[in-house]
Image (cartoon, rainbow, N blue to C red; front, side):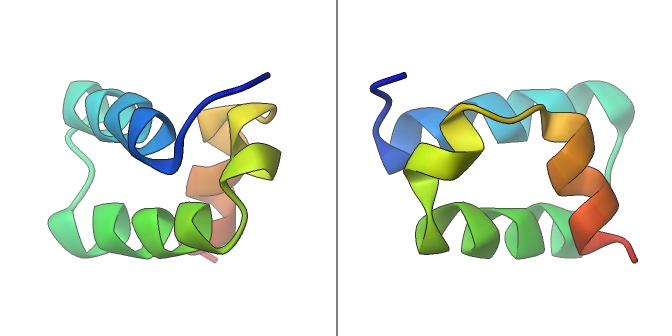
Length: 54
């Protein structure tokens, strides 16, 4: 899926907003997205949330 890093982050932010995720967790997720946006464009946001809240 061809999505820019910013597009993936926007999706992540919306996902987190709907679930009332803390801002520090949102920031950790954004950092992970920056490392490999293509990977996260193909994954579920549930997987990213699980990774950054371990």
